[in-house]
Every structure is written in C-alpha cells, then in structure tokens.
Image (cartoon, rainbow, N blue to C red; front, top):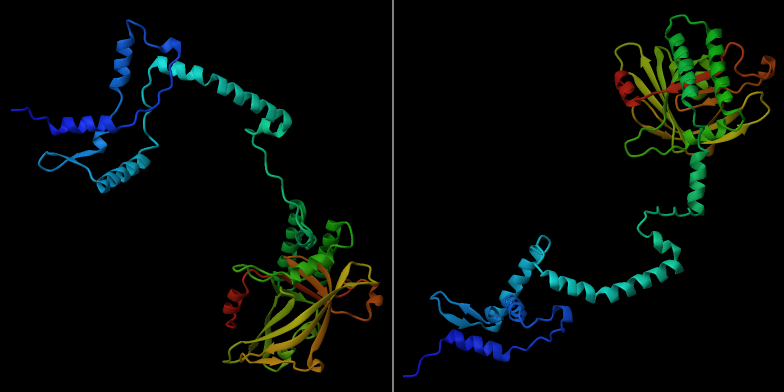
Amino acid sequence: MAPRIPLLALLVGACHAFSAGRPQRPLPPSLRPSATTGSSHQTALSAKRRGRLANNVSLDEDGGVRLMSNKQKQKLGSSRGRKGKRGGGGGEEAAISPLLAEWAKEDTTEEGAATVASAATTSVATPSAAASDVFVPFEEEKSGKKGSKKSKRRSSGGAALSPAQSAQLDDLLAGIDEMLQTTNCDVSELVAQIASLVDLGASFSGNDRVLLPTLKSILSKRPGKDEPRPAYRLAWVGSDDAICHVGTALHKVPLARLQEIFLLLGYGRWELLEVIRILGPFPNVRNTLKGELKVSKLNGTTREGARLEVAYNSMIDGTGKEILAGKDDNVKVVNLDVWFADERAIVCTMPSEDDESMGGDPLKGDGSNILLFVKEENVDEELEKLRAA
C-alpha cells in the first residue's frame, strides 16, 4: 500500500513550485561566505526568510487545513492593512546583523556623496537655501490705498494723552466735581476752573489742530455690539437761557422742574434727553430731541474752537409719541461753540454777539453762556433711578 502524502506537504511543495524567485543583489567580497563560515551565514539568512504558506491556507473549526478563497485572502489583507496603520507609529525597528548594516552603508556612500555635492551647488546658487533651517519672519504685506486711508483716519481721530497729562486732567475734573457738590459754590471760581480745563487741553497738543479732529471722532464714533455710545450729563450750566437754547424749554411750565439732561453722541447724531419732574402725584417726563450734526472750524477767536450745528428733526414726548419735523421750515437749528472735547468732558458755549465786550474770550465773565458736559457711565441706570426709563 503506497504511503499517503500529507496534504500540508503537497501544499508546501506547490507553493514553492509556483512562487517566483526574487532577484538578489550580489554581496560584496567582504560579506561573501567563506569555506568555513559560509554554511552558518547561509543558514542564518535563510532561517529568517518567511514563506507564503500562511497567505494561501487556513484552519477550519475542526482543525483541518483548507485552501483560502480569493474573498478570504482579500479580507485577510485588508484587516492586516488596518492593523499596520494603527500600530505603524510605535513599532520597533527590525534587528539587522552588523555585517549587513556595514555593507548597506558602503553601498550608499556614492549616492550620499552625489547628494551632498548637489546640495552644495544649490546653496552657492541661492544663498537663502543655506539658512533654510533658520526661522525667518514673514514680511508684512503692504496695505492698499483703502487700508492706509482708514489707518490715517483712526490715527488722526483723537490725541492720545500721556499718563501724566491724563492724571492732570483727572485731577482738574475731580476739583470741578467737588465744587459742584457744594451747596453754594463760587461761580467765578468755577468758571476759572472751567477755563483752566480748556487751557490744559490746548497745552497738551502744542498746536491748534487737535480739538476739531477729536470732536469729530467722538461725534462719528460707531460703538461695537456690547459697547455703549458716548454719553454725557449736563453737570453745570450758567443760565436758564443756555438750557432753553439746547432743550425744549418745557421745564418753564408751571409746576415743572428740570431734573437732568443727558447727551448721547455717535453715528453723527445728537440725542438730548430731558427729564422733567412735575410737582404732585405725577410721573417724571422724559423728552428726547434728535438731530443731525455738522462741525466746522471756528475762526476769528483767541482760542481754538469748533462750531457745532445741530438740526433737530425729531422729538419724542413724555407719552412716547414721536413728532417729526416734516418740512425743512420746522427743523430747529441750534449752534454751539465747542472749546474742549474729550471722552471725559465737553465744554461748549452758547454763541453770543457781545463777545467783544469780554475781550473776545467767551469763557470770561459770569459764565452765563457756558455748558459743561461730563461723562456718564450708565445712562439707562440713571434713568431708572429717576423713574424715566
């Protein structure tokens, strides 16, 4: 009876018979096996060689050996590829014999020399390539004409004060506020302090071209989403005529008293809020005047000044009803002369025809035409306190 050849042996023989031989690169003479050690090196190299039997056969549940179908081979290859991608970053390098590593090093010497020569030629042709490993910051792109115009407008929008100048301005404003808190303040001294405030602002710039751009920047400011508009409160006024000049004059009605006047600027508009208290069991009344603005330089004066023209074209009365001017004849135009403008305070006067009698200085005399506005942090909160929100 003929001996049975195991199925596994037949498969191994078939795999070796149909497997294509890989062309081998000849070893250098220093690594060729000698008569005594040739067999040992050949055995060591051939022992690490892996066949393809595992790629063609598989074991079933009963332990039998079966040939793999093409679908199973594709499935096995895709699963191995996924494993290789997952674990490819942290694998260890394969062990290589010292003699084989030395041979590979000698073989690549000529290629490395050619690469170094080409790199040297490139570095001579382009000097910037020699410093390619050194960090060089990117060159700033030149802004276009539109961007340069915007930057010039922003830079010329207002004069930046130094810390010392800002401290002087804060001290002077604090002194004026302290005088206003007293019951019977000296009006002449208060007017002198307001004139000192105007002189201090003029001394900061050293020229006569800072008031107008600063005022324009405040009037045309466009606040952000969470940023409030420039807001001011009328801290002191020299006379009732000056109040009627900018307001509605409704506080002169019997049993009416003027409580506060707030001013909102920005977006090139003027918005004046009057809070009037009615004596008796009546709520406070808030009147809102809105108008367009025009600014120009004031000529023929001893001080640097700006002429502010306010054209009232809308009014919201105490009931919340808005009354529009409609025709141009119904628009009320109010002129004010501004002598000091800052985010913290604005000093303006009601134009007067007899300024020559005061030596041409509108800030001298009893101050009957002066209006002093100081910054208000939260207008809505103040309106709530006055029950006029």
